[in-house]
Amino acid sequence: MKLERANPQQVREVALKMRDSDYREFSATSFAETREALAAELETRYGGRLDVYCASLDENAVAIGAFLEIRPNVLTLLFFATDDFRRIIVPLTRFIRQRFSPRLKAAGAHRIECVSIDGHDDAHRRHHARRAQREGRDVHPRHGDRERHAGRDRSRDDTEKDSAKEN
Image (tube, rainbow, N blue to C red; front, side):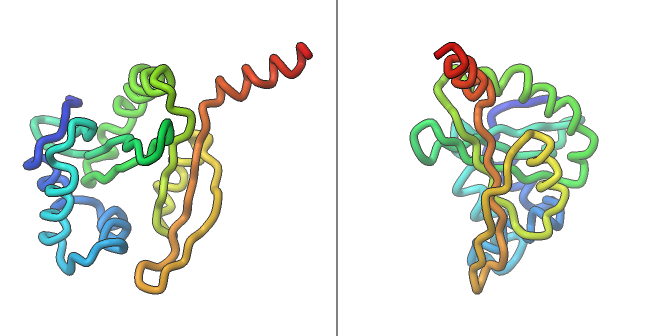
């Protein structure tokens, strides 16, 4: 697996081949009426950003991901992938845990939010595996149900508990 900053072509390539569950999720909040139109929209929105990454396998773009800082020190997870994602899930997860997460914490991030459409069970299992808590459900007449999950930097919680015990 290779991880690098995503370029516009990689964003478009993954968007065109994204899993059906990802397409359902991203198209729910877009006016794009076709997969091609959605891919063009995602390429424009994320293809030129320095904080968006592409995971590749055998020179083929497999996944696009980012932690986008929407509010100070609060990150929102962006992620979509092709069906080949299952082939890189272990090394990608290991990389994020060992190298990426500590950098985010050191930079002051204390919350990561994940928004996913109702029925995207695979995503919900991954959120819960990372100790994210389901915070609620939004219902929109055009876009359907969406679940909100969030995780906090647990090391800060432990530090707060330890100092409370000392007092």
